[in-house]
Length: 158
Image (cartoon, rainbow, N blue to C red; front, side, top):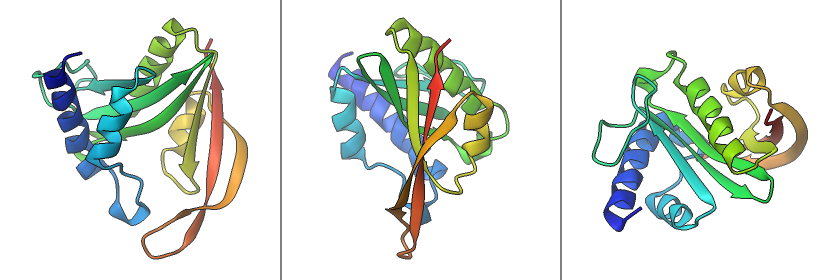
């Protein structure tokens, strides 16, 4: 991917992220975190439009994205987001399934993710085969100073 394509991808991701994450939880990444992650060959991004189709640089605007990192036979789902106006259309499910497909081509056997306790995406993760494998007590800090547990999930690639 050339530098221009990466800039466009980062722009697309940031546009989704700005509306998809509630600032109270502090889960959104900043532009530098996203661009630094995408420089690494082990980090992968999938962007889809409002119909669930892949977004290419300079193409239609992304309605959602997933970022992941691959190592050995494992993949870590780093971020997943869908713009609020496109929620309820199955785009999060499409992103997870596409991630599983692409991860399998990298010989991935398991996908891991971590999320804050109470994240409404938990039901989606569970329905897509993710199981809780651990809890980190008081791991996250919300903007109001309250502490939240982190849940770690794992799904097998079949």
